[in-house]
Length: 124
Image (cartoon, rainbow, N blue to C red; front, side):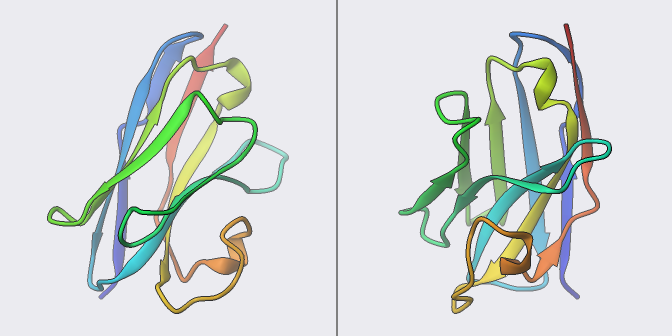
């Protein structure tokens, strides 16, 4: 059974940092992505990382502030968020895609499995 479980969300002041984790189980050899969805807005791509970690994909709004990494031995992917802004407030989702998935990394349709989401709130 495929499962993705996010953790690490919470409330932080603007300028602060958070690290989200996504633990995967039930499958192997997958690319991972992080998306976020604010109230009333569409789900948007944040970051992605290939199975090997050799390729990463960034949304322009977070480049230089957020980084993605993975530990395949632990089947876990991390999202390090620095210099947080109130506009980063959203539910953050991790998602997995099979290595052979040739769809876009930047669109939700490019992913095969999703976690339940974790809330990140940045106060001003």
